[in-house]
Image 1 (cartoon, helix red, strand yellow):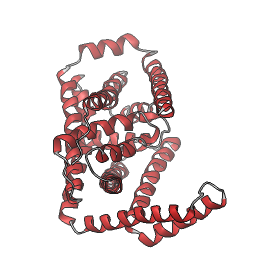
Image 2 (tube, helix red, strand yellow):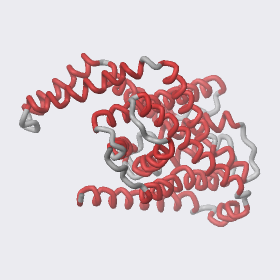
Image 3 (cartoon, helix red, strand yellow):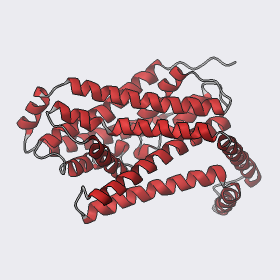
Image 4 (tube, one colour):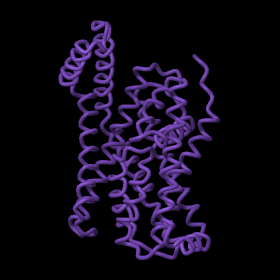
Length: 338
């Protein structure tokens, strides 16, 4: 418990330090101009951006709800929305958004779902999201390849390719874990042997049985999921819509500053930003995402207003999302055991 609290405090401190650095570099040259533009913008557009954030989380919750139903478990859509915001909070405070999935398993277990099945639900939910995320990234890459929105920058090009490659590899790994029973068994067997040789694993037989039970659960539930192709396609489309809604937020914020952009270009540009930010080893990708936003959106928006748009967008999409998540966490009450 103390270690978890220590990690939590460290992550929060890292976020605050990087936030101060980001604010410094964003405001140091044109502080008054940026602040004045934020004060004088149409704040109704910020409200629309907040609605986009909430709509996005609601759509993700619908997918989560459907995955739970396909696994023959009963959790209300309202409860799924609450858990979704809690997951968003833990995604935001951990590097690589790594804290979201373990907490998803934990809170599903609190809904009287056994850990093995909760893990399967979390994995299936993640696969659907990851497919949607990679699909949007591919479309963005193809769009830029055809319309040449961004000039070829050697470093940025490498970062985009790296981010895209990492997400593809993560998707492949989760597919292998869920559908490749023989391959996943072979890989886990090798890892167990290494663990035994290095004396990390004391009881080889017990560890092997436990991992095999998990792998059997992953595989059986993945096979069950594959029987509902129409529902899976529906969930993929819902997640795609959720991501598009999330990526369209800068469009509405820019409108607040009197700038009317092409919404398709906004979605494509945000996809590039998030592709880079997905592998930044700081909670919330802080620092990398802000830099990527200013870099890419500078080709659509001229002047210091791009910094003002970035600050509003980042506050709504990340910090406000974490605030909502913290509220949902404080209001959560464990479900009574059946």
